[in-house]
Image 1 (cartoon, rainbow over the protein chains, first blue to last red):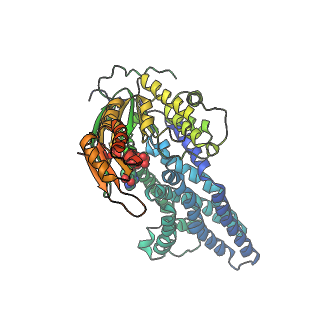
Image 2: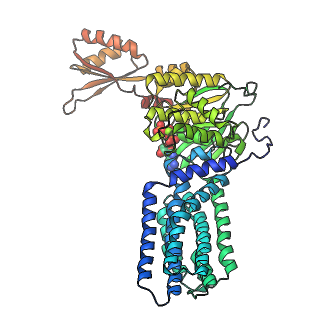
Image 3: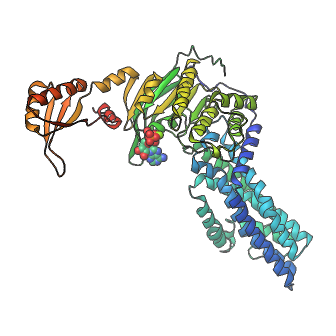
Length: 250
Length: 320
Ligand SMILES: Nc1ncnc2c1ncn2[C@@H]1O[C@H](COP(=O)(O)OP(=O)(O)OP(=O)(O)O)[C@@H](O)[C@H]1O
Ligand SMILES: [Mg+2]
């Protein structure tokens, strides 16, 4: 071959592409239906916290820690699933992904933009309500710090997993729900070794470490509670990029 | 948009397709196809399900072939990132980014292609397809024809060397069709390789270009449009004649009608017997059949071609 397009070019600046895709995905994924549905779930969570607060529990720090743990292990991943899987998944389903894919832009730029868009939406729509709900039951500063850190780490890891799921699976939503409710729900309570395979085990370890409260099977140190989910984030995004580069585009 | 692509003197073809096959499960979508394309407009003609879209998607690297190789400017479009920047595609599906207006959509395409002034390029591309860059309605509010033109505009932002359009004329009114066909010709004349698919024979005739005919996944014929049209006209035609005296007319046709063969179809419920004729000269047959019918005193009720639809044309073309 003489004429080839692979002339060594200096790597083009991908920042404008990242910003443009990020803004596109932010807009297209935040549909009124999704915002209302997840907003309603978050409102229920806050309402429940108000009820608990009024009933004035005997061990309010324990109750608040348990409630934060429950929110971070179900409400947060479900919300992240709804938005994260839709970012690139919706485009793959309706056939508009081609308008991102057939450009001189590496797949990882799209994947990172999808992850960033998911995180951007989920922090205000579930992250903030979960912190508020926790504070309503017990405004303990170490508990709130643990909830903020645990929430951010959880949103990061689940966003990466579900952006990947949206690329990997045609029906990412049911798959994601099975993962959250069955896999994580079962595995995380099935014993010490099995618990290593669920994000929520790490998140509750963060809560336990910050508050000093004991949570069942919260066995990890603060460092591994934070670093393992962040490692999962990196690996899931790398796999998603590879997968997107090799997927069939309509 | 004026361009100096610097490819006019290209000696190697822009697109090279070599022994390419692709199947989905048991369905063979594209079967052992080879061709190469240079500068200019080429039409890809084939009936529904012929494998046009699959072939075009492979050309752009959107899906890999199961067998064979595809090269665009010497590179594999599936894996080579820079070569993607030199391809423009108008896909068949209607979906675009629903949250966007036309300008933002085309501008995004320009940004992703790394052009230095995306706003200017987007405005120019929209103007090329006669859309108003200041129209800030969402694309969802657009008519099918307008959407189609937005899709063409986004494919022009990178001055593509290879422009692939999958049935771009669907949904356009005749004036817009004319305008698009002119645009394709202009883009081809500027030194691009423009490949346009269609399942409408008459549409392709207006491209006045080289034609690749695909049917059932195979490359059935290639060449200049007129050559293909002649090939189609010279094929045996089947014509059904309904008459009150099928036997007499059949005998007369065999004797003096200049036909290849005659077959009598028995009468069925609610339908009289008829004569089915094979001929290579359909226009002449139409004249002689009337004369012969008068000679044998038969009444002609109906003379209909059986295979003038495009399907049968392609069926003929792919016969071994
Ligand atoms: N993703 C897919 N999965 C399964 N089968 C497919 C897929 N894509 C195409 N096919 C099959 O391959 C064959 C060719 O399809 P293709 O869409 O390429 O035809 P086409 O010529 O573009 O038809 P049309 O004029 O209807 O657009 C068809 O039989 C189709 O069912
Ligand atoms: Mg098609």
